[in-house]
Length: 189
View 1 (tube, rainbow, N blue to C red):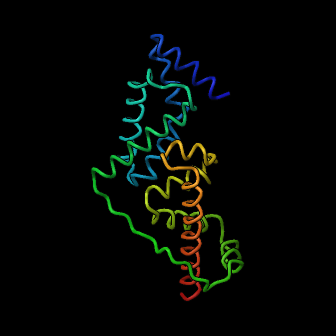
View 2: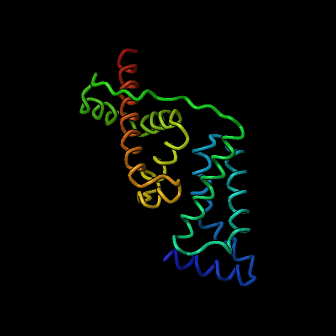
């Protein structure tokens, strides 16, 4: 089990085998980078955040209380580091409209998306996700792409579980609206 492996490695590191920390880095580097990239939107900043995350985790490893999974604790550090990076650089995000219109039936949107080739589907999804605010992108990535449960997402982001569920619902509405707008434009071109 991953959690027991992490705990075993942590115990080795705390006992003085600092080189063992490399296995934790190797095990978690991809998702740490993904979280950072989704928030920072810039590869260099995301790499810096990932590096800072592991440095901070190494320095604070003694404070890990084993009340949650190590990955949750680590991803929380990554999330906080990335948010701090964005705040420092004062990046602006494009806000998506909250209103949802019923201009196109859901079945029509699904049919249009299903009619696209896989490459086109990925391109559309990537473009739409890029327009989401940082926190929304992280929630979508953790929930839909990394299959993290709501409880883990709550622990990582510091949002309550009900807040995570509500935000995911609103994000789905935004995504639907954006898909609908994309399909409408595509059909008029």
